[in-house]
Length: 419
Image 1: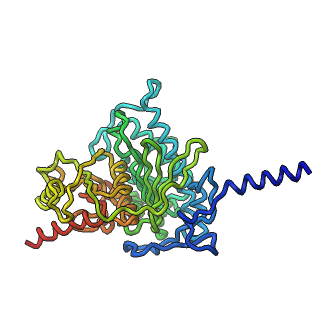
Image 2: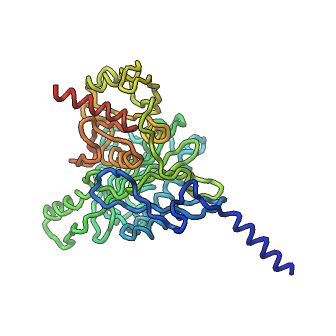
Image 3: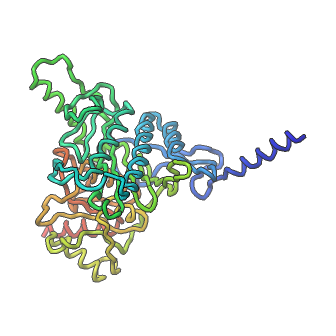
């Protein structure tokens, strides 16, 4: 009898630990998994993926990133292998989060400069180099990557070479399915002051027609073949399979999109798992916040200057007076913009006529996330997602955020160009 009562109590306790999630996820009473599809999804060069909806969720652990990706793989078998990549991203973001938190301790040797300059001419911080190597190795060991491009690498690198050395030799391996591009520690110049930083990641499909003849003798021919394969990284944002960013701040957040909405996970340090905290995020269409470096105001194009001046004075299209909120870390500023609405941008100016943010591993991945949340992202004259990179570290002007405010900038440039 005692055994029966013990089993009964345990059963009740376990069942009470799970709850139906009607208010957050469930859309069909008869279905455990419901493949939702975004309405009016931005145009992409890939078919729209199906997003999972969860019938019941453990109140203790919630929906973990692992469970979420498992459900995605079941609904979208054609991208099932991407779950392995997100397992690596999950681990890398946790490790980087710990590095950033411990960087202020006297025993830590991660602050300060490495003494080297990256391909953009920027002084590399020690954390830039450490986090780049950490993320590169985490992705390499999945066995799913063919080519990788990073802000801290002079050129795209292989995922198959010798991980023990610092060799920049490029090797392409047949059969690898994905191409990854990333900025390992966005906003690293702020890390010494404890200001939020982040990691940005974009994932493309690898060109299956890319073949290297390992027996080729002529070095020039081999280099040409490698160059053709490395062109896998030079794809427009409309080819993206997935994008994600990790934000290291008051909590550690991981936001991702697979082409059907944006999902934000928060790291629960008590169980060591990313837990879904904000499903299907939608940015407000209207806003009263802008995030620009106003020190460059006088150097902006005239249409940009006039629009922002109108926002500051309350004479813009909305008639609302805007407030300025600027962190100086793209991930931090975009994260706030997604949640509260607003406009984030680093437009062209006389000092940086081509903008300052990198198209491949900052602009396109973050634009993918912004568009999937219902916002817009533009160079002021064209959609960022449709820009095809000419080289890995290409810079472009970027403005993204709430639909109506960004459209006001697009219209201002169109009017100016037609005058």
